[in-house]
Image (cartoon, rainbow, N blue to C red; front, side, top):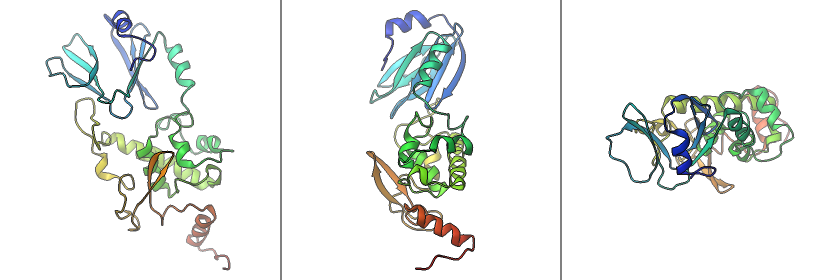
Length: 262
């Protein structure tokens, strides 16, 4: 869980310093100290970062504890040990490391123009691209499905088949579902909790993800599940069609244009 450092080095480097900033880039939490030392923490599938009184009982699978002078602890609890903690000696070193791995931030940098530029010349499936953190940072499997449902795009659509209107719709949908997820303090299907140990609420408002066989909130058609790149993808087969041509025909019809013969 410490790819580029060790317990001994963390003890040597961090003790006695103050937290100067807490930031986020994509799915990485970034903790900056007063000497420009940084920790990046990625919780992966099962990790939780909890800010608790030092007197609180330490949970099983607590792998990192950072103790503060005000008698509180920051604890990283991760039963599956997929989480990662990296140490950087300067913001320059940190930013270079992140730049090698991450595309534009999906909440800070994304708009229709940025997304159109990233999609240009890309023929891959749109769902797979959204999960590629070097393409766009911060979108996970659940939020990709929710954004594609909101934008009425099939997860198997080739990226270069999206019209400019669809690109704009998708950019807005990504921002919208992520913002709502934050406002609802995250999505807690299994182990996720926020920093005070409280489960999120976003799972109560999902439109597609995890709802196989349940009615689409827009049209009532049962939600379907397929597997793309070993990840489950949920979509409405009526609202999110795989064929670009069929989608364009439906949009033409909705605008009142004549349907092609046959």
